[in-house]
Length: 123
Image (cartoon, rainbow, N blue to C red; front, side, top):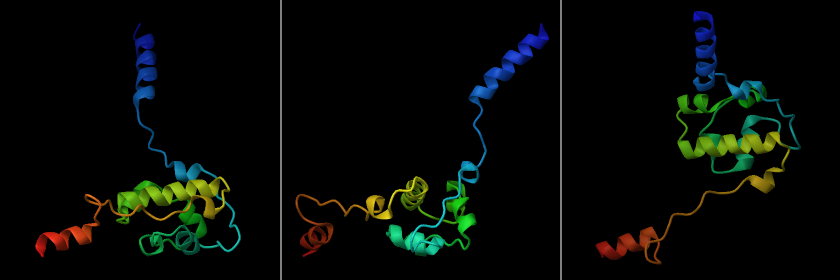
């Protein structure tokens, strides 16, 4: 009786336990494409000045980087998500021109930009 209870508990706990495996280390390492042969070249190609926010030297070390590593390096959440998203698109062999884009501009307040609205209030 205890054996069947133990095996059923093991099955239940395995389904609810979060995996702590680094999935970035398991994914395939993409080969360099065109001018992009270094992590710095990749980060400058995707834009948003990510080359100043992330500093990883080796190609292999860059592609084994996870979100936790970027968080420890102090990269902001939006930048971290954008870099990881671009890395996945690059792994899928999509051209960088198709997926890299600049951040959305700041929202306007009643048809005015933030700087114009702030000067109108103070002036």
